[in-house]
Length: 286
Image 1 (cartoon, rainbow, N blue to C red):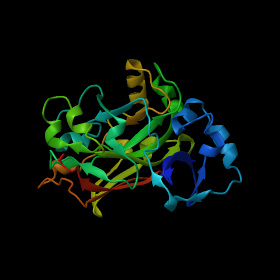
Image 2 (image 1 turned 60 degrees about the horizontal axis):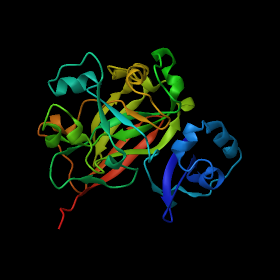
Image 3 (image 1 turned 60 degrees about the vertical axis):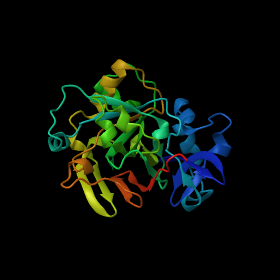
């Protein structure tokens, strides 16, 4: 099952993908669940499946504008340096425990929406990643049971403003610029991806492949990440964990490749789909 959030005719909604169309869940469930996150909080996936049984789409995917699948997450937690070859390309040392940093909802756009390169920098970089979406309250979850707490998976672009990222040893400055990254196009529910460590991940810029790896190359796999993170904080339904990027980022290419207005970034994960976004420049204030 593919779940998504979107706008149509100026109104926000959420639904499920049926072929090339959308089954709109807002008219059916919106009185109880105003957004997809609230449906996850209520563990409504089985109710949604019953509604989809024998259903037809309400309108075409081409009629919507995509939002991030969870537009209103409580938390977005990112993992840095989680692929060995990415650690090597940056001449860094692997950490003994996961490197974590936050992003915020305003730092993301949905599939098909424009990523914004901030006017204060010309060093916006792409980072293709697999993200998991939490489906159940999680606190002190052992790795052996961690996959039970995942609602599904989606594509993630951890758009990084590299010069600001290097202002200090903390990463947040370069990772939270307004509309600098993207999530989507939808969530593929966990029952369709029994092994998230067996997915191919690729990133293209203007059709040229920049990253190609497997999620099997993660240093810390998803079960360990959930165990580790849920020991620190409580994870809520709809929270997002972005699991890190493989080698091939623009910063470490020779010469470096940074995104500019008109570029198109495509992040593809097998069993999920492709997150596609164009880049535009932010206008300085008048």
